[in-house]
Figure 1 (spheres, rainbow, N blue to C red):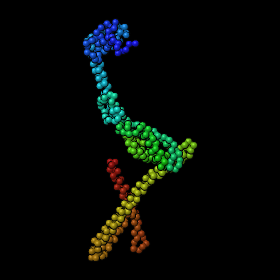
Figure 2 (cartoon, helix red, strand yellow):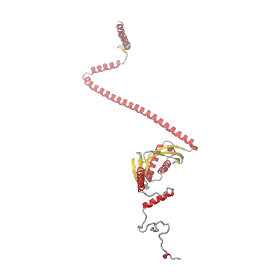
Figure 3 (spheres, one colour):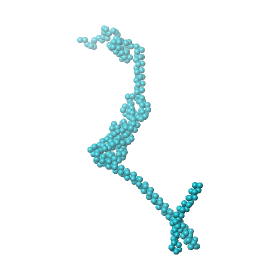
Length: 367
């Protein structure tokens, strides 16, 4: 066995094709080093074409230029597609929440915007659409009665960032908060209030309670209204509740009728009372003025009476008789002996005078 160290190093063996070629494929005298990348790429391409039966393709400068152009064109197309796919639009009724690698970046308003793909993402939230959440269930009232209550909460989103990131499943959170507020308010109300005349007040109380709860969550909601849709007792006692409700309605109806009658009668009575008071005041003023006039007239007559008492008496007597006799139609006068009486029918005399006066006028009209 021959020692390996003494074995001759045979570089050129028969069939190698080149006697000056070393084991690494380099000619003797050529600089050693890694092959050129273009050459490796061309060799690889020739071998692939040889596998498909097309034979080796000699390298050429024109092919390299075409490949470079194709690569540049493809790269330019990719850049254009990347830029064009980054444009997005936010509607006027929306807010766009921009995130970068899943983290909140900023909130964008309506309009056309651009973002870098694979880095940023945008979520659009409708901030003008009114949403509704219906809540219903059997609830216990303050007086320990079970009632089926159904309410509807109308709300909208006012802050898209808080809506998306402050709570998980914000719509479900609002529904649960509304159910809690309804149960709390119904638990503080009586059955009569829930079934009859205080539904609006209960709805307002539920809204206030819900706003207080959502303020703690800061979920970006705004509660528009809370509508009381229905309230009814269990079917087993529904007839009894209906009778009670009908009795209350009758009581309210009669109460309203009584109030209407009161509102009608009281103004009339007050008007009549005011009329009587006004007439009394007028009568009072008239009597006072008449008395003052009589007193003034007496003061005027007094000096004349003191100068000629008999003449004044006669004059006053004649004035009184004139006033009295002017209101009667029959006059009876007795003589001094007292046996004969004279009857003067003034009414008949006045009627005869009217007839006599009317006859000549009619004759003249006939002529």
